[in-house]
Every structure is written in structure tokens, then in C-alpha cells.
Image 1: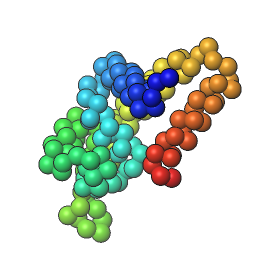
Image 2: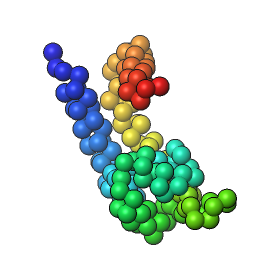
Image 3: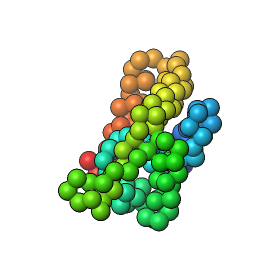
Image 4: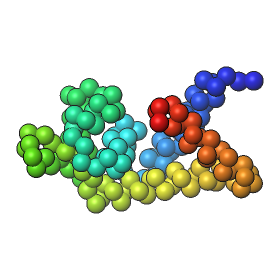
Length: 140
């Protein structure tokens, strides 16, 4: 039997390949790293640049350059915090949200297609198990 580590590595590689394919098909023209920044801004709108860099475990200088790239592309905007204008918060633009949601939907559809051929119980079991594993790994 394969080790859990081996299975997780393969699953992660398969997901990354699928995501990379969808990013190439989209009009986003983004790397996986830039996609992850947009996705985090989608999940946690209004985080400061520093908070998001920490969340993604990225060097602040490198992260700031990546944010500038996304801002120039019209996907993201930096706005000063109302209480402390020195703090810049990240927000998706409408263009960024629309394009990102399209990629998310396409990735979701591809995963659903992969699950086709399984019965409803098997599909639900896999999804519930992945959710439970993720929660346990985050300690929640």
C-alpha cells in the first residue's frame, strides 16, 4: 500500500497540473503564484500586504512586486486602511473577481468530471474525507 505522504504528493501534483492547464486556457495569463495571491484576496478581502505575505509565507519584498504585477494587470488594487493610512489593504477588482471565479468554476467542473462514474455515496465520501483531512491538518 502506498504511503499517505506519497498519495498526498500525487494528489497535490495532479491538482497543480489541472490548475496550471486552466490558467493557460483563461485570459488571466497568470502564474500559479499570482493566482494564489488573487485567490487569497478573494477569500480574505481587505488583508494588508504584510498579513497576506505572511499567510502565503512569502518574502515581503517579493510579495510587493507580485502585487504590483497584479495591480498593473487590473486584477487587484491596494487601498489605504481607514484607521492607519500607512497600511495598504488588498482588494480584487471586478475584472479580477470575474476572471478568478471563471477559473475556479472551470477547475471545479474538471474535478467533478473526474468524479463521474462514481456513485453519489463515493463522491460524497471523498469530498467529506478531503474536507475533514484539511481541517485536521490546520488544527481546526
